[in-house]
Image 1 (tube, rainbow over the protein chains, first blue to last red):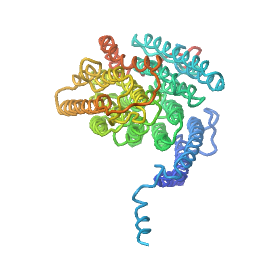
Image 2: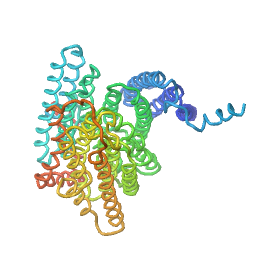
Image 3: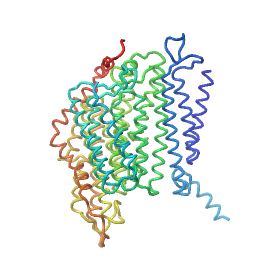
Image 4: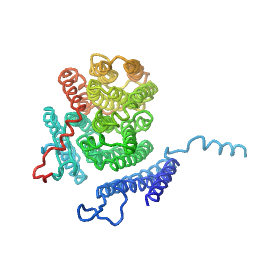
Amino acid sequence: MELLFALVIGVLVASGVYLLLRARTFPVVVGLTLISYGVNLFLFSTGRLATGSQPILGSAESYSDPLPQALVLTAIVIGFAMTAFVVVLSLRNQADNDDDHVDGRQPEAVTEPESAEVSRQ
Amino acid sequence: MNHWLIAPILIPLLGGIVQVFIGYAPISLRRTLAMITTVLLLASTIVLTVLASDDSYRVYAFGNWQPPFGIVLVLDRLAALMLLVTAVLAFFCHLYSIHRADEGSRQFHALFLFQLMGLNIAFLTGDLFNLFVAFEVLLIASYGLLMHGGGTVRTVPGLHYVVLNLAGSALFLISVGMIYSVTGTLNMADLAVKVAQVRGDDVFLVQAGGMMLLVVFALKAAVLPLCFWLPKAYASATAPVAALFAIMTKVGIYAILRVYTLIFGASAGPLANLGMDWLFPIALVTLAMGVIGALGAEKLRTLIAWQVIISVGTLLAAIGLGSEEGTSAALFYLINTTWIVGGLFLVADMVARQRGSAADGIVTAPRMHNRTFLSVLFLLGSVAAAGLPPLSGFFAKLLILKAATPGLAMAWLWGVLLVGSFVTVIAYSRAGSIVFWRNVSGHIAETEKLTLPITVAAGSLIGLSVVIVLLAGPISAFTDATAAQLHDADAYIQILQTPMVGGKES
């Protein structure tokens, strides 16, 4: 279970970082969301992975740590609010600049070959 | 348990909630209530500073849970000092915003007060996860404030700021999780005990967590590889917001100072002084980068934004010395630089308002209105910021230079700091002479008159430099005692033994 859990977190964060570096607002928002999923799962695992045990001391042989669950809950709420804000901000960026690049315009290196092609035609 | 400790959190919280509900009330009522809140906050921080100056730790445990269970607020000299510096800066920024800046949206005062609440939680908290929550509270308020006033110029810097800080928050959570998974606690005092006992392979986990935490704090503090978001964001924000943001980078520095002297301090066993070898060289490079940026600035506000980075570099270099004298000098410099940079942002905005379309660009323009008054304010501010005698910046930098012990570190610190200060003076004098002296013929159309509140706000913040010089003795005595308290981590750990009212046995 530990291996599977670690792989899931790794894949989520890796995809998130890849999308974050795409420099367009929609992939960036999705990337941030994936990273926060990965982080939440990671936080959850910091209390050790245990199945079928209760978060109450003394009632059973093994217990699961309740604190990471509280931390994850807080992190989810905060992450949700932040994602909502960044979505609104991305829409505003799109409306203000007519472009979904995070800089509000395309980097020059990308536009140059296109214009060169146009002039050749 | 002392209930005064929650005053700096409750006052802006309640004031902010009131502001949310009276968004449609007459603006004079909203302004009056908002100013009352800030004044009350200032009064409460003065009380706390007086309380803290007896060198004891005061603890407020939410829900009466015995530490390390539950969340605690801890008041010591450092927390009180940061609270007071923030409250003074906030009072004058708020006064400045009364004039014009708060007309842009109905929620300005609410956001401003929530921002103060987040800052105060960050300074008071004694819990690592609560520090994360405080960062999020102050960040989400700062996102709103940064975008305040509209205009398309703020969208792109705002987006960069938000995305970077969200990535930083993810990193913060990962590092907190790593530290928790080994130590099983998030209370800072308990962490200081547990981290020292970590042995074997767990050391590497905590080490990785601690270094990632340093990256997060460095992002907040705008240390070199992570500082390029700052000039654009600060230069495009509304003046009182930019001035208030002068304290935002200091939150990162406060967190570094707190976590790396307490949890990873000298007595942390195999993890003692984690990351401190990195701090000093990176700080010097940050300082150099800030100076280069200031030289190349095209607008007054960009110039002052780079001054923020210069002061971050100077502060961390002094902290990186790792001695009590260095920390004390850094705290003295922090008081000075926070207020002066805040004041300079306000002055730059006033200049921009008097120059018509040239705004705050460092370009020749027709003679501005109120030139004498504004140029004197700018001169005083830049003298204090660059560190020329007789104003406070000079004494602060002198203390930092004196704190270095002879050796390689001293050579680097003296070299970079002195050359850096010299080049900063060149940057300010170039900007000042172009903006104020090199006039072209022409006439600037009617501009807004300088009203009393904004003049008082900007003048007072700059004038505080003189006050710091006059009170240099008491202030440096306070920062010396703060540094001594900070480097004595064992005393902080004693708060775990504080009995709570009606606390359980054990």
